[in-house]
Image 1 (cartoon, rainbow, N blue to C red):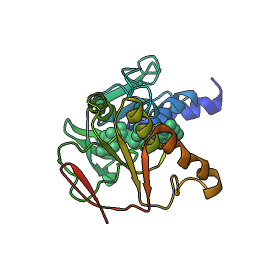
Image 2 (image 1 turned 60 degrees about the vertical axis):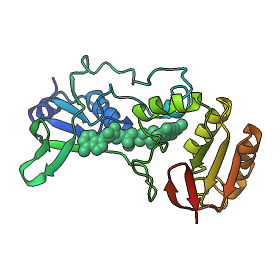
Image 3 (image 1 turned 180 degrees about the vertical axis):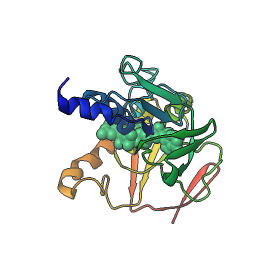
Length: 224
Ligand SMILES: Cc1cc2nc3c(=O)[nH]c(=O)nc-3n(C[C@H](O)[C@H](O)[C@H](O)COP(=O)(O)OP(=O)(O)OC[C@H]3O[C@@H](n4cnc5c(N)ncnc54)[C@H](O)[C@@H]3O)c2cc1C
């Protein structure tokens, strides 16, 4: 062992990663790749084996795949997984996280807690209203497509476009409402995004742009 490696090993400390999505998982794996040999704990609120989200609006939604777990051998990498565990507080001065299973001390902490979908006024708890963010969301949405209901998709971004395509393929009538004047307004310049408006027509979905949702009721999306 070189002197430098020995010095680094001597400083080895417990690293805790909160969030078992792409960022958290890759951080833990990268620590091992960089030669870190100390304990690494990966904590995730969801109960599932860590998984990648992109297939949720594609193969998983369409029933072509059951899940999208990362192909990573956490045991072989000596990464401790603590899944289904919500971190409820961070006491930075004490270097401690609080969880339902008690406190978790750390020396170094990586916060990779991702993002939450925006919710709409009146949408919470209303039957027939779904988010598409997690593996459980995708599993709940599959039978909705099978029932061939009339579907309103709020948001003409990538995920909205993918869901609209899947819902059309499943035989649902689909209306997509988008507050901006065009699809993908926040992501791409108009010239690049312009041809994508045609995707909706091609799939048989109705696209309403400049259509801001005011609130949601059972069975209806009410536009401003
Ligand atoms: C349906 C869908 C399709 C997508 N398709 C694509 C695509 O085709 N291409 C692309 O580039 N991107 C796509 N994305 C976006 C991509 O998945 C995200 O950019 C990526 O998931 C971000 O990873 P992350 O690790 O930062 O956050 P997240 O994936 O949000 O992971 C954060 C994790 O932290 C956990 N967490 C949060 N708070 C706590 C807490 N207090 N205690 C414990 N755990 C906690 C959460 O449960 C979550 O599992 C898609 C996203 C979705 C939802």
